[in-house]
Image (cartoon, rainbow, N blue to C red; front, side):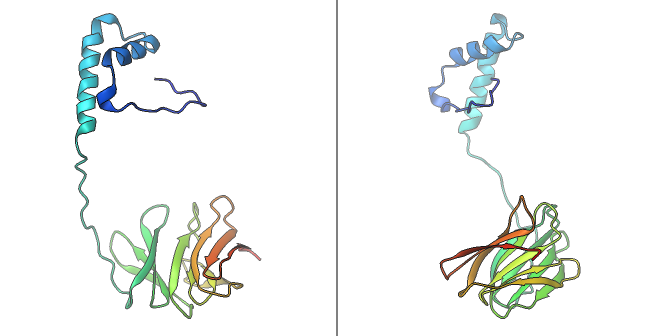
Length: 187
């Protein structure tokens, strides 16, 4: 069925659909669906209903195990391409990984306590943000592994940090001090 901008498609539960009504509705908007092929359309809709009732059989398998942090991990984030990911840890570091090979590419060092939050600045992914129990957030260059900026102001552990997806120079952090702070990353 064509959906207008102000409409929301609400699928009916498969068991409660009157397939005759659905077929007539389809035929009212599709000139190629004529009375002659109603039986085939109903047959196809019945098969779709049956398929919808089947449990999903998607299987996931272990692709890689990334292991070099010496203490437990706290967070993980993929870059936009999915080729790299970053991990934060109780060992006070953030590590950049090549997902395909499983190799550690860089180690971001500089926090004085647990790195609890890690994030890329989407869509560019040319910066990494870490939030730490040392009450600071840091912005890093993933290519050089250099810290570009340290964001101060919280009086307790930072538990989340994100780049603004619409304005990559803005960062928000939240802390156990009951505050969220918005920083302009370039200042």
